[in-house]
Each structure stands twice: as structure tokens, then as C-alpha cells.
Image 1 (spheres, rainbow, N blue to C red):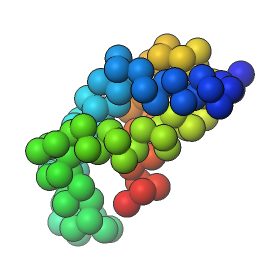
Image 2 (image 1 turned 90 degrees about the vertical axis):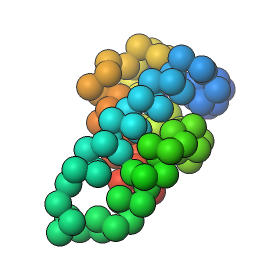
Image 3 (image 1 turned 30 degrees about the horizontal axis):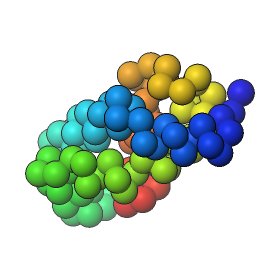
Length: 98
């Protein structure tokens, strides 16, 4: 069942959840820095990855709303989403924004 707007807003401010999103962003950034330069939109993705590795909190601020509105996050009770499902939600959110 999807969260209410208030619950979604509160999740965007939840420090534990934000920390998990930060870890997922850094994990994805590391993946991107290792991908082939021929990957579509690689220079944009690589620039995001570098910025994320230097300042992950800025990336969290950019993606948190999109992550919190992802179906997998909405269907999980609050911070209960699994790490693999959260990783997918973060990667999907980053790709929407790049």
C-alpha cells in the first residue's frame, strides 16, 4: 500500500533512510566510473558519478524525492525496503534525472 504524502515527506527527512540512499548513490557512482566510455550518455553519467563520490549528500538532496516516490519504496512500510530493492530504486531515480 502506498504511503500518504505526509509519510513520504517524513521519509525524505529520515536520517537512516537518507544514509541508505547515500550509500546506494555511492555504489552506483562507483559502477558508473567503471563503465565503458561508449555507454550512452557516459560523460553526463561520469560527471554525476564524480560529483557523487566527492559529495554524496548533494546527490541525495537531488534524488531523495524521486526515490521516495518510487513504487518499491512506496509499497514498503517506511524504511523497510530491502537494500537490493532500494539500490534499484536509486538507480532508476538517478537515470530519470540524468
